Image (cartoon, rainbow, N blue to C red; front, side, top):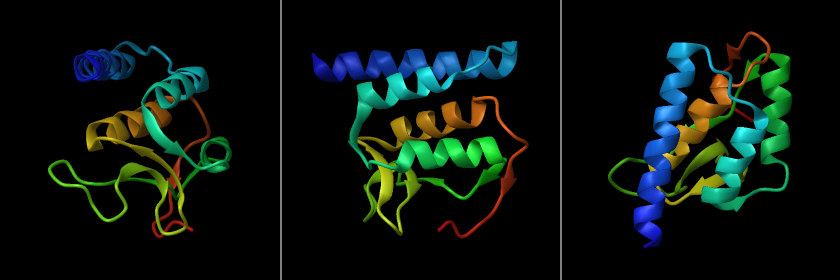
Length: 117
């Protein structure tokens, strides 16, 4: 039952994120927090606040990490895997959705800075 619920929720969120991109529907931090609360298996105490601070500053050093077919050493998630400041998910799809939702939240003009922390 839990797997069916997770698949349906993931499908709904993918549709929501796709619609946000096409119809200018804004994703809020509340939406991101709800998704994380419902789906994350681990949330580092500072990860979301630091991602929000970067988003507001127009900087992006965090990343979506993992693999679609096999778990990487770091698992699946968003954040800074080299420091352990991450939000982990069971699947790479959930991590990708979370990353897309964060990118869709209004904020400063994003400058990607490779290398992270």
